Amino acid sequence: MGCFTCEEMRFLEKRVFKMGVTPEALMDKAGRGIADAIRRRYPVPGEAIACIGRGNNGGDALVALKHLVQAGWIISVRCGVESNHLHALPRKKWRELDVINNDRSSLPLGPRIVLDGLLGIGASGPLRGSIAEAAGWINTQRGCPNTCVIAMDIPTGINGNSGVPCKGAVIADLTLTVGICKRGLLMPAAVNHTGNIETVLIDELQIPKDGELCLNDVHSLRGLLPHRPHDFHKGNAGRVGLLAGSRGMLGAAVLCSSAALRAGAGLVTLFCEKNIYPLIAPMLPPEVMLQPVNSLTEIEVDQFDVFALGPGMGIRTWKDGEYLSLLKRITGPLIVDADGLSIIASSGVDCYLRSGMVITPHPGEMQRLFPDLTDMSRLESVSHFAKQFPDVCLLLKGAHSLITHRSSLVYVNGTGHAGMAGGGQGDVLTGALAALMGQGLKSLEASRMAAWLCGRSAELAITRDLESTESILPSDVIRYFGIAFRELTR
Image (cartoon, rainbow, N blue to C red; front, top):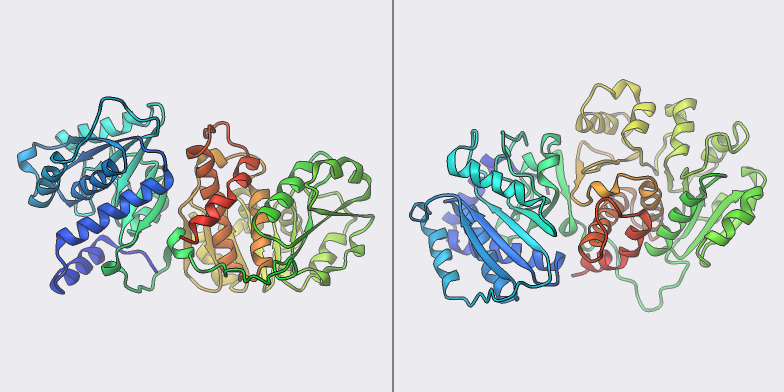
């Protein structure tokens, strides 16, 4: 489903109201969905503070508080306007909170969250007066220990169509967009204000829409990975071949192999230089089959369901032409990353990109591969790539990774955080992607799921563990694949 402009969203809401659905019914569903999303991310109750304005955006936050307090959370409300200026529905929802027991005698051990319910998509122009002060207060709270800012539908001060923030706009760690994702949230200008993005589904607001941008979140991925029947065996789970690692970069091969195992691959075979075999063998999980070779011509590519090349491989590890010859020999599903992309960039992109291939460049690698796209924005470069190479799937890594294949449609990944800005995260992504393709997912679906999986697992490593954006490691991400996978089946 594509994203909506603010005007399209308002038109849809009016149409739903004409069909007999009341604004309060939508608000109740939105608030419950927001609370459910928060509880899924934070299973241990904590403290929740709603900072509200006069409109229904604040009403959604108040309904969410009602469900959170019933689940053991301590709640409070800060109003960015005089309480007698609240619209009728938010005022009613605030009164309903007054009759709920909110025992503040001791704060729970869980997180502290601040809900941004100041302004919704109907607002425009700069922030003024008490709303500007309230937005400033929200932003100061991000620096408090164990505190997360969650925007209701859209962060206050973000243009819902362009994503451009006004001065003093709220900086959220998570945006729970109601019904259908708003176009502005997926724009590059908004990336530092939205944080993670997830849709709160409301049945009445679910209608098909074509468009060039789609949010890649948990709801859009559910059902893509088939349930395994009882007689499933390792052959069904995919035979994954990897060419990764070299002297000085052994860890890349270990991370890639480990991620492939944890993402469900049936058999993982890692090919390496013969002279590094004694170095890398003790580092690998025992489930990985390690195959040392003197030459890439020794690799029998037909025995694998998918092959991944590049992580830590080194650009001078193999004799000239051996790697490029291997690329030509692999006719099945193929993933190329890191050093594998660098060799292609210096050898002629047009000669080696083909149908069934997924490439996973970071922005620097994208520039080396396609220097003519350097002056374009990320979205423009991805759309241009899709037209030039329609049979190749592109996963452009970065904050809100972009994924496209065979059309002008671009998926914007909603998971992840700044803690993933470190070496090794791309190796994990390649391993997970290989495992998913080996299990039968098509390149686009596998790329979308791998990007979401790695980002969501990185989030879990912080919310469920003692890690921070500074301390998280790629190996921490792999440890949380299991919980992330379970979210796809709820």
